[in-house]
Length: 192
Image (cartoon, rainbow, N blue to C red; front, side, top):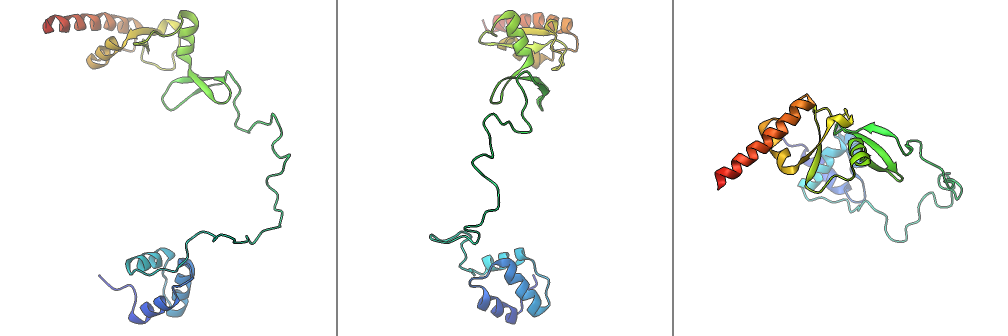
């Protein structure tokens, strides 16, 4: 592998490394020796050769900022008035399709969302019992018609997925649920 620096350039770097940042050091080397080094190349070289500028990248305790006493705008006591909403605020009742493919509905502030199919099911039938899931009969997560929503047990859902019994037709999926129950009973009999 070719050397990055000549001995003269190496010595120059060692003599000037203290108190100077990598970008400034790269500029100095480029001007003095007609090179085209980047800040990153200088940084890697320093790290590989155990050289340190002594700069820590943070202000020491007691440091006075250069802009102390100046006023550049920004925060003021009246900047955020009570009731002021951000530009991307969505009111309660807003619907959107998220990356998971489900329709979500905003139900409360700040930012409380629920899946639309669950809201519809619970409105008509009450809460989903523990150990149960709501599936889409036709497999389309955007079809939240009540006739397309089917309540299944976790056990039924496992068999439906394993056997590929969820179809693009709600009636076929309902038939698949009957088959899933049948497969489960057959497995129980085999175990006995």
